[in-house]
Length: 415
Length: 82
Image 1 (cartoon, chains in turn orange, cyan):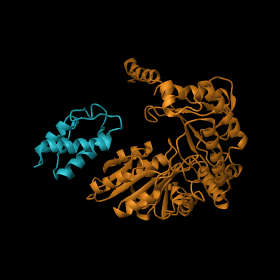
Image 2: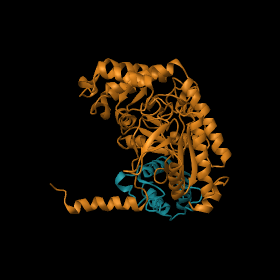
Image 3: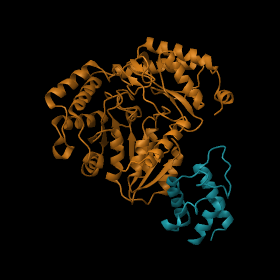
Image 4: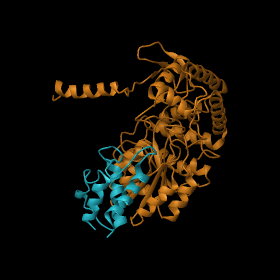
């Protein structure tokens, strides 16, 4: 055993430094299923408290939907608990291929391959399709999983300023001689809640013969008229070369993800993507649940429409109360507080008022951009949102931030 | 050959456009990498810009964080390969 006291101390010192910097993350234990109303034990050992959850990625409120649970039970009964294999050995069931076909249809692409998570999809796709002769040009605010995937691949990496199409065009010109160029974006940016300019991205990629990859994790299921994603919102269905997305958010919230897009690119992933080749297949119970989610979404846009109404109500309420919000039209509504301690204090006070919303600060968001990220769900009823607004008002008043501008908040609390 | 001062201005402008925030004051000798303005990822694209702009090839082992740490040293490096 080589785990000496000296070794242990190295880790203890690092953990102490994380705590000292105020960056130590603690889990809150939920004693119920995921929903608008949850029961939370926090801090560990405390009596559980009933709170309204406004920080889940449960955009469509399907995480605990009875029909999804029933379908998962059926999947468990008919296809078993696990497959004990990767896909290409003996881990592919009929329902795995069915889900791939259904996602292809849902996203309007040519083919789809499932991954254990979207993190894995993003980790695997670049290395599978690119070499050192190629370049990846990514928006500077893309998700960490895309950055990790890019790092794992031998292609050159360059970036463009967030949503700055002029800068992207300069980069496409700079790298014009590369064999392949891939432009990488989030469909909806998870921290700010803004949407990529998908129509302009498509036009630029067409002009410079570049592959367009969009991570739709925070849009699949509810952005666009029928919830297909940001490409539907911008009238670009069929024009995105590669979409990566997750089943861990709006599409049931369990786990799993996929790469969907041009047939050859999907096939390259099937041959070469390491998280696909060397990680277990998605459990049948999850696949069965996601198939039911797609049935529900194909039958009606009711949940996505309700989410839109809820989001508008929430944004209006917070704006009228006098909070500074990030502009946007998605269910991710960041309440800007700028100061990290203020964000932590507001989160703690909201919890005391029965509202579960987490503060985000550096390094998760840029320094001086601390915030409470709220996420609205079709699982919320108006009474949930009214109660949450009352709590935000009360806590906002306590800290004296209602009606203040960004600069006034910074002047009062520091950045 | 482009005048050294002119070259430094071009590189400085690129660095400002590419990496600086509104309130950053970047000059010819501002430490770019050790000062945290340019990370190792971004160094790759800066090298690429120089190679395309000046039609040169900088060997990877010469593109060190030290050589890329300010506009003055970058311009000196480029001059070696013109």
